[in-house]
Image 1 (cartoon, rainbow, N blue to C red):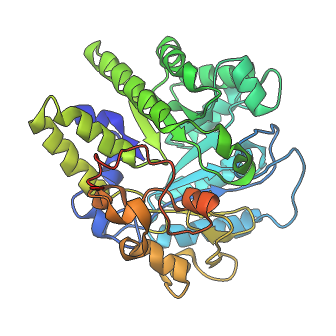
Image 2: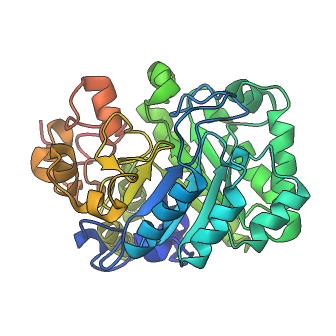
Length: 392
């Protein structure tokens, strides 16, 4: 995750203390030293929508074998023992779980910051108030465009309107809320409209996700943006972030799942302000790039532990059988060992890149989906050979 606002303006939001701390890139089992990783828990596979790019391949039906309330509480106890700072409740649609509020409150009581990733369609005013009252730090609501574009992606007419109501209900009760927007060739042209939208609706935060080819998203490999469109998207994000800052609008703007974004911002600023660029280089060096299997992990509805939510074909153990912390520190699995020290294993452009320490090879699942090799170059890197220091 790259904080555009942190890099450009050196602002400080909650997650920046985990992403940009001196020595944090040296930690091999957590977000920083003396901390566990940020954990996303796909608490249920059941969902009331059917998004075309869903990495969970979720549907509106019950799935057998998901963690019970008591099993989930034991899992949360183990996370607290391992000093996990943040637990992101995701799905499917996590608000479909009848014990969501009980479990999120339980996590908060254990000193873990609960956050919520949702499609927003189930957030009434009462639900928004309960979310705030139990101490959920942040609600991320997924949109993939405005109205028709979003509804087409979400597989349900009216999904945009219901998500809008969810956003407005969060804003009305003072719950911190933001958008999650996955960039692809079908909604690439909507970026400026999304910035207009978050200003009009008083939304605190926006995360622009790069497409990862996993689950139903595997079918979208040929519908991803081109390298040139990725650069154009970043130019728009930078331009609008600077406009917000100039007008005193405090919005947290992030990009997710493509760590060459940080390098792109550095190279762009370097042309005009070398001193500021040096500070950006320092920050992306602290961040250390993609740290799936180190600072970020995922647990699926059945309790299996994975490097991240897009790599569920790789399993390290089950929290029903072993504590999460024990699984996370066990490097007998070659992928877990490799992720904690991946630089010697990387191939192609990634292995030769002068910014490898800042990007850490980007996203492994995307590389595997396209090449069949987990350690090959990430095909979504849009930086040129010249920019990354490869001489032909």
